[in-house]
Length: 345
Image (cartoon, rainbow, N blue to C red; front, side, top):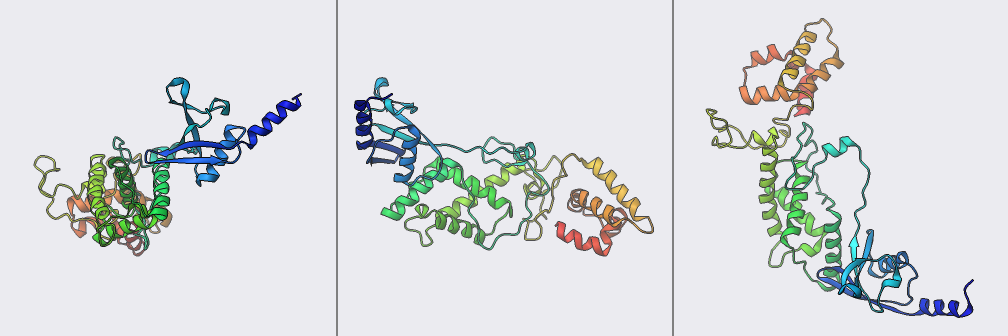
Protein backbone atom coordinates (compact mmCIF):
# COMPACT_ATOMS: atom_id res chain seq x y z
CA UNK A 1 0.00 0.00 0.00
CA UNK A 2 1.40 3.42 -0.96
CA UNK A 3 2.48 5.69 1.88
CA UNK A 4 1.22 9.21 2.31
CA UNK A 5 4.57 10.64 1.14
CA UNK A 6 4.49 8.53 -2.04
CA UNK A 7 0.95 9.67 -2.84
CA UNK A 8 1.95 13.30 -2.34
CA UNK A 9 4.99 12.82 -4.60
CA UNK A 10 2.80 11.34 -7.36
CA UNK A 11 0.32 14.21 -7.03
CA UNK A 12 3.12 16.79 -7.28
CA UNK A 13 4.51 15.05 -10.38
CA UNK A 14 1.08 14.99 -12.05
CA UNK A 15 0.57 18.70 -11.39
CA UNK A 16 4.00 19.64 -12.69
CA UNK A 17 4.20 21.27 -16.15
CA UNK A 18 6.01 19.39 -18.89
CA UNK A 19 7.94 21.25 -21.60
CA UNK A 20 9.13 19.36 -24.65
CA UNK A 21 10.44 19.81 -28.18
CA UNK A 22 8.25 17.93 -30.70
CA UNK A 23 9.49 17.00 -34.19
CA UNK A 24 6.56 16.63 -36.62
CA UNK A 25 8.58 16.88 -39.82
CA UNK A 26 12.03 18.02 -40.91
CA UNK A 27 10.76 21.59 -41.31
CA UNK A 28 8.12 21.50 -38.58
CA UNK A 29 9.54 21.39 -35.04
CA UNK A 30 7.47 22.84 -32.21
CA UNK A 31 7.72 23.67 -28.53
CA UNK A 32 4.88 22.13 -26.52
CA UNK A 33 3.98 22.85 -22.90
CA UNK A 34 1.63 20.47 -21.11
CA UNK A 35 0.03 21.84 -17.93
CA UNK A 36 0.15 18.43 -16.27
CA UNK A 37 2.60 15.60 -16.72
CA UNK A 38 0.97 12.48 -18.28
CA UNK A 39 1.28 9.22 -16.38
CA UNK A 40 1.64 6.86 -19.36
CA UNK A 41 2.81 6.92 -22.98
CA UNK A 42 -0.82 6.57 -24.11
CA UNK A 43 -1.74 9.65 -22.05
CA UNK A 44 1.10 11.59 -23.67
CA UNK A 45 -0.08 10.57 -27.16
CA UNK A 46 -3.61 11.73 -26.29
CA UNK A 47 -2.38 15.11 -25.01
CA UNK A 48 -0.17 15.64 -28.08
CA UNK A 49 -3.04 14.75 -30.38
CA UNK A 50 -5.23 17.36 -28.68
CA UNK A 51 -2.63 20.13 -28.46
CA UNK A 52 -1.25 19.68 -32.00
CA UNK A 53 -4.51 18.78 -33.75
CA UNK A 54 -3.21 15.42 -35.01
CA UNK A 55 -5.78 12.99 -36.37
CA UNK A 56 -3.90 9.96 -37.71
CA UNK A 57 -2.42 7.31 -35.43
CA UNK A 58 1.22 7.78 -34.49
CA UNK A 59 3.97 6.46 -32.24
CA UNK A 60 6.70 8.34 -30.37
CA UNK A 61 10.49 8.29 -30.22
CA UNK A 62 12.75 10.37 -27.98
CA UNK A 63 16.36 11.51 -27.98
CA UNK A 64 18.05 9.36 -25.34
CA UNK A 65 20.90 11.14 -23.48
CA UNK A 66 22.46 7.76 -22.69
CA UNK A 67 23.08 7.17 -26.40
CA UNK A 68 24.31 10.63 -27.46
CA UNK A 69 20.73 11.78 -28.12
CA UNK A 70 20.05 9.09 -30.72
CA UNK A 71 16.36 8.32 -31.22
CA UNK A 72 14.81 5.40 -29.32
CA UNK A 73 11.23 4.15 -29.14
CA UNK A 74 9.35 5.60 -26.18
CA UNK A 75 7.84 2.84 -24.02
CA UNK A 76 8.08 4.33 -20.52
CA UNK A 77 7.77 7.99 -19.48
CA UNK A 78 10.34 7.41 -16.75
CA UNK A 79 12.97 7.26 -19.50
CA UNK A 80 12.35 10.87 -20.55
CA UNK A 81 14.72 13.63 -19.42
CA UNK A 82 13.31 16.78 -17.84
CA UNK A 83 12.88 18.63 -21.16
CA UNK A 84 12.76 15.90 -23.79
CA UNK A 85 12.88 16.03 -27.58
CA UNK A 86 10.17 13.77 -29.02
CA UNK A 87 9.60 12.73 -32.62
CA UNK A 88 6.11 11.92 -33.93
CA UNK A 89 5.99 8.96 -36.34
CA UNK A 90 2.78 8.43 -38.37
CA UNK A 91 1.52 4.83 -38.19
CA UNK A 92 0.04 3.16 -41.26
CA UNK A 93 -3.22 1.36 -40.42
CA UNK A 94 -3.29 -1.94 -42.34
CA UNK A 95 -6.67 -3.27 -43.46
CA UNK A 96 -7.01 -6.99 -44.35
CA UNK A 97 -7.86 -7.58 -48.01
CA UNK A 98 -8.65 -10.67 -50.01
CA UNK A 99 -6.14 -12.22 -52.40
CA UNK A 100 -8.25 -11.05 -55.36
CA UNK A 101 -7.96 -7.43 -54.21
CA UNK A 102 -4.22 -7.80 -53.71
CA UNK A 103 -3.57 -8.98 -57.24
CA UNK A 104 -5.98 -6.57 -58.91
CA UNK A 105 -4.79 -3.46 -57.07
CA UNK A 106 -2.67 -0.93 -58.93
CA UNK A 107 0.32 0.37 -57.00
CA UNK A 108 2.32 3.52 -57.59
CA UNK A 109 5.72 1.96 -57.17
CA UNK A 110 8.12 2.41 -60.09
CA UNK A 111 9.23 -1.23 -60.04
CA UNK A 112 5.74 -2.73 -60.09
CA UNK A 113 4.42 -4.76 -63.00
CA UNK A 114 1.12 -3.07 -63.71
CA UNK A 115 -1.84 -5.37 -64.14
CA UNK A 116 -4.10 -4.99 -67.16
CA UNK A 117 -7.73 -6.01 -67.22
CA UNK A 118 -10.48 -5.34 -69.76
CA UNK A 119 -12.32 -3.26 -67.16
CA UNK A 120 -9.45 -0.84 -66.43
CA UNK A 121 -11.40 2.23 -67.46
CA UNK A 122 -15.19 2.38 -67.45
CA UNK A 123 -16.27 5.57 -65.73
CA UNK A 124 -16.85 8.78 -67.71
CA UNK A 125 -14.77 11.82 -66.73
CA UNK A 126 -16.40 13.38 -63.63
CA UNK A 127 -17.82 16.87 -63.58
CA UNK A 128 -15.63 17.66 -60.57
CA UNK A 129 -12.42 15.65 -60.26
CA UNK A 130 -12.02 14.14 -56.78
CA UNK A 131 -8.38 14.21 -55.65
CA UNK A 132 -7.50 10.69 -54.42
CA UNK A 133 -6.08 9.92 -51.00
CA UNK A 134 -2.30 9.75 -50.99
CA UNK A 135 -0.09 7.60 -48.77
CA UNK A 136 -0.23 8.19 -45.01
CA UNK A 137 3.09 10.02 -45.01
CA UNK A 138 2.14 12.30 -47.92
CA UNK A 139 -1.30 13.05 -46.46
CA UNK A 140 0.28 13.96 -43.12
CA UNK A 141 2.85 16.29 -44.69
CA UNK A 142 0.24 18.00 -46.85
CA UNK A 143 -2.14 18.46 -43.94
CA UNK A 144 0.56 20.08 -41.80
CA UNK A 145 1.60 22.29 -44.72
CA UNK A 146 -2.03 23.32 -45.34
CA UNK A 147 -2.37 24.37 -41.69
CA UNK A 148 0.82 26.42 -41.96
CA UNK A 149 -0.38 28.00 -45.21
CA UNK A 150 -3.74 28.99 -43.71
CA UNK A 151 -2.16 30.46 -40.57
CA UNK A 152 0.93 32.13 -42.05
CA UNK A 153 0.48 32.03 -45.84
CA UNK A 154 3.62 29.91 -46.27
CA UNK A 155 3.79 27.85 -49.44
CA UNK A 156 5.11 24.29 -49.24
CA UNK A 157 8.53 23.73 -50.80
CA UNK A 158 7.76 20.50 -52.67
CA UNK A 159 10.63 18.03 -52.74
CA UNK A 160 11.32 15.87 -55.80
CA UNK A 161 10.26 12.74 -53.92
CA UNK A 162 6.98 14.29 -52.69
CA UNK A 163 6.11 15.63 -56.15
CA UNK A 164 6.74 12.20 -57.68
CA UNK A 165 4.34 10.52 -55.24
CA UNK A 166 1.62 13.11 -55.83
CA UNK A 167 1.87 12.96 -59.63
CA UNK A 168 2.04 9.16 -59.71
CA UNK A 169 -1.15 8.82 -57.68
CA UNK A 170 -2.95 11.44 -59.79
CA UNK A 171 -1.90 9.73 -63.03
CA UNK A 172 -3.24 6.43 -61.73
CA UNK A 173 -6.54 8.07 -60.85
CA UNK A 174 -6.85 9.86 -64.22
CA UNK A 175 -6.11 6.63 -66.06
CA UNK A 176 -9.19 5.07 -64.48
CA UNK A 177 -11.19 7.51 -66.64
CA UNK A 178 -9.06 7.93 -69.75
CA UNK A 179 -5.52 7.25 -70.93
CA UNK A 180 -5.51 10.48 -72.93
CA UNK A 181 -6.84 13.42 -70.90
CA UNK A 182 -7.50 16.68 -72.72
CA UNK A 183 -5.89 20.00 -71.84
CA UNK A 184 -9.07 21.03 -70.04
CA UNK A 185 -9.06 17.81 -68.03
CA UNK A 186 -5.42 18.28 -67.01
CA UNK A 187 -6.29 21.79 -65.88
CA UNK A 188 -9.29 20.58 -63.88
CA UNK A 189 -7.12 18.07 -62.01
CA UNK A 190 -4.46 20.68 -61.26
CA UNK A 191 -7.11 23.13 -60.04
CA UNK A 192 -8.70 20.46 -57.86
CA UNK A 193 -5.29 19.65 -56.36
CA UNK A 194 -4.53 23.19 -55.20
CA UNK A 195 -8.13 23.61 -54.04
CA UNK A 196 -7.83 20.60 -51.72
CA UNK A 197 -4.23 21.40 -50.74
CA UNK A 198 -3.75 25.20 -50.98
CA UNK A 199 -0.16 24.88 -49.76
CA UNK A 200 0.67 23.58 -53.28
CA UNK A 201 -0.33 26.83 -55.02
CA UNK A 202 2.37 28.35 -57.23
CA UNK A 203 3.59 31.90 -56.95
CA UNK A 204 3.66 33.95 -60.15
CA UNK A 205 1.13 31.76 -61.93
CA UNK A 206 -2.14 33.23 -63.19
CA UNK A 207 -4.05 30.06 -62.28
CA UNK A 208 -1.75 29.10 -59.38
CA UNK A 209 -1.37 25.64 -60.95
CA UNK A 210 0.24 25.97 -64.42
CA UNK A 211 3.31 24.05 -63.29
CA UNK A 212 1.20 21.21 -61.91
CA UNK A 213 -0.74 21.03 -65.17
CA UNK A 214 2.46 20.68 -67.23
CA UNK A 215 3.91 18.13 -64.81
CA UNK A 216 0.72 16.07 -65.05
CA UNK A 217 1.03 15.96 -68.85
CA UNK A 218 4.56 14.57 -68.65
CA UNK A 219 3.66 12.13 -65.87
CA UNK A 220 0.65 10.81 -67.80
CA UNK A 221 2.90 10.13 -70.80
CA UNK A 222 5.31 8.20 -68.57
CA UNK A 223 2.42 6.29 -67.01
CA UNK A 224 1.13 5.24 -70.43
CA UNK A 225 4.63 4.03 -71.31
CA UNK A 226 4.73 1.85 -68.19
CA UNK A 227 1.31 0.44 -69.01
CA UNK A 228 2.37 -0.30 -72.57
CA UNK A 229 5.57 -2.02 -71.44
CA UNK A 230 3.54 -4.19 -69.06
CA UNK A 231 1.46 -5.39 -72.01
CA UNK A 232 -1.69 -3.25 -71.82
CA UNK A 233 -3.07 -3.30 -75.34
CA UNK A 234 -5.36 -0.30 -74.95
CA UNK A 235 -2.31 2.02 -74.92
CA UNK A 236 0.09 -0.19 -76.90
CA UNK A 237 -2.16 0.14 -79.95
CA UNK A 238 -1.57 3.90 -79.99
CA UNK A 239 2.21 3.68 -79.57
CA UNK A 240 4.79 3.67 -82.31
CA UNK A 241 2.99 5.57 -85.04
CA UNK A 242 6.25 5.47 -87.00
CA UNK A 243 6.76 1.76 -86.34
CA UNK A 244 9.23 2.27 -83.47
CA UNK A 245 7.29 -0.18 -81.27
CA UNK A 246 6.14 -2.41 -84.08
CA UNK A 247 7.63 -5.82 -84.79
CA UNK A 248 9.96 -6.36 -87.74
CA UNK A 249 8.18 -6.00 -91.03
CA UNK A 250 5.04 -4.57 -89.46
CA UNK A 251 3.94 -1.31 -91.08
CA UNK A 252 3.86 1.92 -89.11
CA UNK A 253 0.63 2.63 -87.24
CA UNK A 254 -0.25 5.69 -89.27
CA UNK A 255 -4.00 5.36 -89.08
CA UNK A 256 -4.23 4.85 -85.35
CA UNK A 257 -5.53 7.79 -83.38
CA UNK A 258 -5.64 8.51 -79.68
CA UNK A 259 -8.70 7.16 -77.90
CA UNK A 260 -11.55 9.63 -77.73
CA UNK A 261 -14.68 9.64 -75.61
CA UNK A 262 -16.58 6.45 -76.45
CA UNK A 263 -13.39 4.56 -77.32
CA UNK A 264 -12.44 3.71 -73.73
CA UNK A 265 -11.97 0.00 -74.47
CA UNK A 266 -10.70 0.51 -77.99
CA UNK A 267 -8.39 -2.51 -77.75
CA UNK A 268 -8.96 -4.19 -74.37
CA UNK A 269 -6.87 -7.06 -73.07
CA UNK A 270 -8.13 -10.62 -73.13
CA UNK A 271 -10.10 -11.71 -70.03
CA UNK A 272 -8.10 -13.35 -67.27
CA UNK A 273 -7.55 -17.05 -67.99
CA UNK A 274 -8.34 -16.78 -71.71
CA UNK A 275 -6.01 -16.71 -74.70
CA UNK A 276 -6.88 -16.19 -78.36
CA UNK A 277 -7.52 -19.90 -78.95
CA UNK A 278 -9.94 -20.17 -76.02
CA UNK A 279 -11.83 -17.08 -77.16
CA UNK A 280 -12.02 -18.46 -80.70
CA UNK A 281 -13.70 -21.58 -79.31
CA UNK A 282 -16.18 -19.36 -77.46
CA UNK A 283 -16.83 -17.52 -80.75
CA UNK A 284 -17.62 -20.82 -82.50
CA UNK A 285 -20.03 -21.78 -79.71
CA UNK A 286 -21.70 -18.40 -80.17
CA UNK A 287 -21.99 -18.87 -83.93
CA UNK A 288 -23.50 -22.34 -83.40
CA UNK A 289 -26.03 -20.91 -80.94
CA UNK A 290 -27.10 -18.33 -83.52
CA UNK A 291 -27.92 -21.14 -85.97
CA UNK A 292 -30.77 -22.26 -83.72
CA UNK A 293 -34.34 -21.18 -84.41
CA UNK A 294 -34.55 -19.54 -80.97
CA UNK A 295 -31.08 -18.71 -79.63
CA UNK A 296 -30.66 -18.31 -75.87
CA UNK A 297 -30.51 -14.59 -75.20
CA UNK A 298 -28.65 -15.16 -71.92
CA UNK A 299 -26.01 -17.38 -73.54
CA UNK A 300 -25.58 -14.98 -76.47
CA UNK A 301 -25.01 -12.04 -74.14
CA UNK A 302 -22.56 -14.04 -72.03
CA UNK A 303 -20.52 -15.17 -75.04
CA UNK A 304 -20.59 -11.70 -76.63
CA UNK A 305 -19.28 -10.14 -73.42
CA UNK A 306 -16.62 -12.83 -73.14
CA UNK A 307 -15.36 -12.46 -76.72
CA UNK A 308 -15.43 -8.65 -76.84
CA UNK A 309 -11.62 -8.34 -76.71
CA UNK A 310 -11.17 -10.85 -79.55
CA UNK A 311 -13.73 -9.01 -81.65
CA UNK A 312 -12.01 -5.65 -81.09
CA UNK A 313 -8.64 -7.19 -81.95
CA UNK A 314 -10.00 -8.38 -85.27
CA UNK A 315 -11.51 -4.98 -86.06
CA UNK A 316 -8.35 -3.05 -85.14
CA UNK A 317 -5.70 -5.40 -86.55
CA UNK A 318 -7.43 -6.87 -89.62
CA UNK A 319 -10.14 -4.33 -90.51
CA UNK A 320 -12.33 -7.11 -92.00
CA UNK A 321 -15.10 -6.30 -94.48
CA UNK A 322 -18.71 -6.30 -93.30
CA UNK A 323 -19.56 -9.64 -94.93
CA UNK A 324 -16.74 -11.32 -92.99
CA UNK A 325 -17.95 -9.81 -89.73
CA UNK A 326 -21.51 -10.96 -90.45
CA UNK A 327 -20.26 -14.50 -91.06
CA UNK A 328 -18.01 -14.64 -87.98
CA UNK A 329 -20.16 -12.60 -85.62
CA UNK A 330 -23.83 -12.99 -86.61
CA UNK A 331 -25.02 -12.02 -83.13
CA UNK A 332 -23.35 -8.63 -83.51
CA UNK A 333 -25.93 -7.63 -86.11
CA UNK A 334 -29.00 -8.30 -84.00
CA UNK A 335 -30.81 -5.30 -82.54
CA UNK A 336 -30.04 -6.15 -78.92
CA UNK A 337 -26.35 -6.77 -79.49
CA UNK A 338 -25.83 -3.63 -81.56
CA UNK A 339 -27.04 -1.70 -78.54
CA UNK A 340 -24.94 -3.79 -76.13
CA UNK A 341 -21.78 -3.36 -78.22
CA UNK A 342 -22.02 0.41 -77.91
CA UNK A 343 -22.24 -0.04 -74.15
CA UNK A 344 -19.16 -2.31 -74.16
CA UNK A 345 -17.17 0.25 -76.12
